[in-house]
Image (cartoon, rainbow, N blue to C red; front, side, top):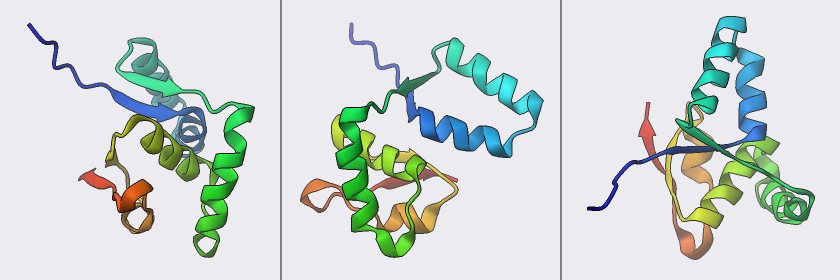
Length: 107
């Protein structure tokens, strides 16, 4: 039997950005969500910085932040293009290899 469990993926820069907007109660809930394994947090390592810089340079007119660039990199790595974001404008513009686009699933 195939396990069709879908997990949410993110990066540490996104978690940092989310914490900036959350009150303590929200931050603690987010941490618990991660600890339970409901959200998998991918690392961005020094070896990724060249790719991140390229993404930022490609969209220099949009002033892409590290959180957004890390999600574009993660999508390239994993092939996952479904995204939950309030930043519809930017994620409607970003393109992945072979012209693939993000599929904004919420909100």
